[in-house]
Length: 556
Image (tube, rainbow, N blue to C red; front, side, top):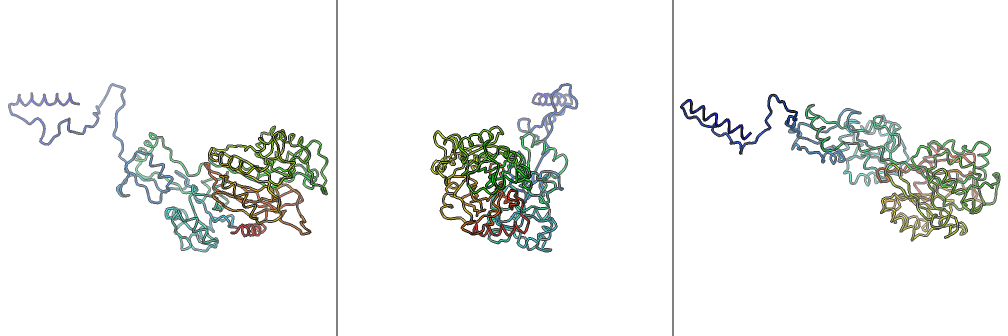
């Protein structure tokens, strides 16, 4: 360019000399090349293969106030000028047409001790718009969620209350019965997720396109500017993504007592080995990780089952392991009191059966060190460590330095190990075969021992011992369930001190949901035992009565 300029000046001098009239070299006010802002020279034609440079399309981006913070953080990585007002912008990321663009998932939630499980879209719309209130409580939202939901659900009525996101959980719990709509990424276990149109964002098979509370964000502006924004995203290596990625989700189900003996085993002989799972098998298999607390060892020497057996010395026929296969067992807890009833050889035989199937097992082993050790499992980048123990005994079941058995509760060691596992990035699940109880309430000594594992860093502390389902609590960032009750065990009716205990028919299957290394939700699945062997899902009336009792005894 400098050489071309000098040639131009020389030509002007020569021509002016020929004319005989002096002419200014450049018009007045023109900058010399060293002072000017130069643009690339673009010839009309070229014979070289070098790329032709073009000027970037100017972008001035405007982000509406309601845009989710998660999307804002992603956009911050893009080199783009931010407009100082919407009118000065030529491109924006805003709500668009359903099922187009980036899906941002919201959840209808309520405080955890809420009975309602689901709602139709029609009823939600009525509650939102104050046409009626099928929810029987207000709906809380943050200011940004309000604007988004008004685009999805329509104008909000007086039943909708706006709160700062930082106090949304506290406000909703204080106003029970009450509900809220929140972004998926803000879920945590003290919220209960309510299904809308049979869809829940914590389900494995969730479809954001079929879910009415999915917001869709698209680039809006002239086609050339959208193309330039997409080019800049590509250059920066940024792919805008949803707040829910199925590849980061893990569903774990945890269960209570399984003992394939006595009347349960007799029914298996009569109606088939998989009969006990007829009503809950699909649910257990569908989880990413299925936990079974199997209290009784298998033995090839086990006699035929006796439904009227009075002794408490138990074994299971090896063919019954088909039931555990059938329900999709992944993790076996072996804290039970009856692991060595039929001798230590039966326990070793059972451990071999589990290894052959590739199942993880914990809280029992060939020696004390193996019994105490946690087992680790990874799924969708969520890393879990399962650890458990039995403080109740009897003492002969406990493993020693050179004898197989069940892990005794060495509390100082367990607390140190839980802290170590947590620091190593594991979500620690701690379980107990505690002192058995036939009541729902929790006594101070039980609370003390369960809480100490939560204090050490266990995200879930679960009681596998209780034949009667027990209370639960949120404590120090952990979910503690003191007893889940029976899964596959024959206690239709139990007499304790000549008093009939019917609670042994009732049970919990706890469905814990984890996302991107965090526990985000727990779903309480409620069961009722039938035919001395087969748990079924409770009816809506049974479930409402049972949850009301359990929430009350939990202090809610």
